[in-house]
Amino acid sequence: MAEIWPGFYDIIILPPEPIQRQAIKLSAWLHENGSPWKLGAEEFLPHLSLYHLPVRPEKFREFTGALDDVVCGFRGGDLRLTGVSVRRIHRAVFLTTDKPKWLSDLHLLVIKALRHFFDEARREEIRTRWGKMTPGMRNGFRSYGTPMTQVNFVPHLTLGTFRWEDEEEKFEEGLRGLKAKPEKFHVDRVHVGRVGTGFSCQEVIHEARF
Image 1 (cartoon, rainbow, N blue to C red):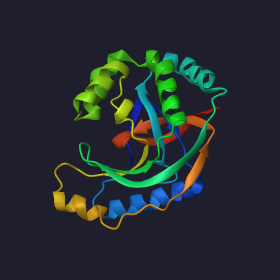
Image 2: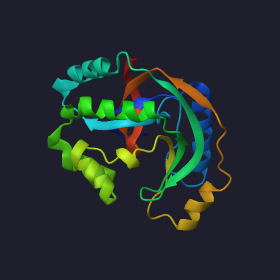
Image 3: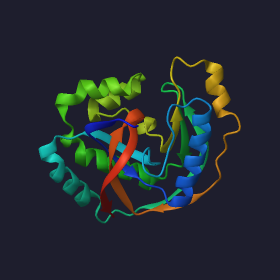
């Protein structure tokens, strides 16, 4: 059963059902080959992350209201799947998308509007959860509470992760034959999800339409 990290949220883009099914299928293959968890329709939901942050309970309603306000009237667009990639620093496997200008604009808009809701009392806890970081990732974390900024913002759906104690051969075996079907989808809203094991999305609790 997945762990949920109390008071820790993610601003996310949810893909439509055909892409969810593809991501779940690819994740199941990784799980069979050593990833400790797999995506599903009710927990470990397929999603594209924009901004993870801890929010104090008494600020949550104000936080979701600010998200509604900042994305209202935003012009979204299409995202295209670009394939499977690996972030070796976290031993994570991604289903990546392209990175059109509108998505980079949305990402920055959300972070700048919501970063003052970041619960600074939990900064060290959150830094520990992120684990290893490059110098650029550390700079992003110092500024915004997330390492996934600028060039380190790689739009993706996480398909699985591998333990550091696993042998490299096991990691490579899990990747063999993993291919993504090209698809695209339109984005006209974002959601707030509860974060848990492996920075997964365990529940969707708010929707903000453009």
